[in-house]
Length: 113
Image 1 (cartoon, rainbow, N blue to C red):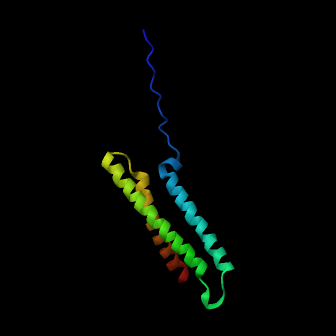
Image 2 (image 1 turned 90 degrees about the horizontal axis):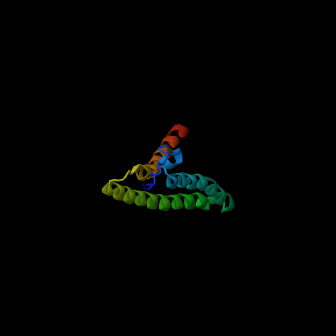
Image 3 (image 1 turned 120 degrees about the horizontal axis):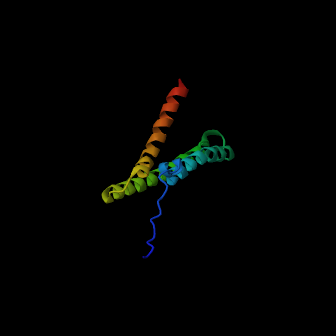
């Protein structure tokens, strides 16, 4: 009689970070770090009519990274769906930049009034 190796069962419980996606958590961390970066660049910049460069740089950087993040997650979602794999984290990644824009606009509406 030969001993056959037993299949190692993986734990069915996955951490919340694994379900949400580490790439998505890194993106949220990036967005959270852009806020103090924009404020710091604004504080060290020129005064008067030339103000706003620090915030503009932070918004430009956010726009470029968010666009690339969205495109990357859209491609990953399409590939995952084509191969029959779960595409949840990629779809969450596609929704994150849109949700941040909508949340910012909603926050502006609430705080301005």
